[in-house]
Length: 201
Ligand code: MN3
Image (cartoon, rainbow, N blue to C red; front, side):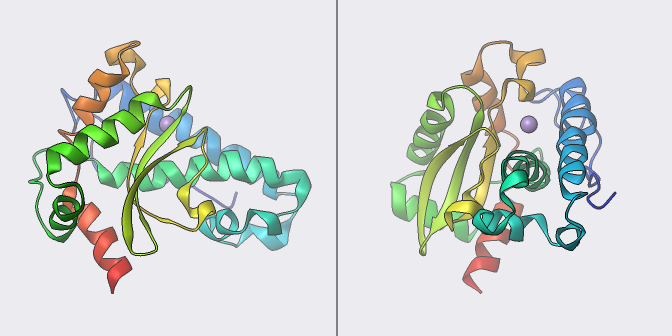
């Protein structure tokens, strides 16, 4: 057992009513755990890779042995993405700080950014993620399919939104836009600022 489920850092009901406790519990304790179990199973054959940070493996997937490359991409990606996602969620955090200033400088307003990010999240066909990334010092909105992660493209994720149905179906059923709207009420801008400042430093 190499990789382990990180603690959520808050209670399952901490994001109510925007994201419900049952969804958080299943998402964290079942879905995220499953990615970790399958990643660990794939790495069993390659003990030399077991001590490597999953971010390092994802940043250079071509260096991962071919027979487990897909598993590392999917389950390692799932582990990394969810570990990145949980701390991005917190209620009642004001949208302010250097990242918000940079967003306004680039998109003209936070509202315009929200619209474009929401479109990226809503139009990702099937399962995947929407992202705010730093791409060569420039902010960009992108989305990835499945559990693919911006790290594999060489960009630095600052904010991410899981748009797999398992992230919202219990509360919002098929209404992904309602979940995206709820997400904007629980963005932990302090954490997004942290990612941005760390990258700039
Ligand atoms: Mn998920």
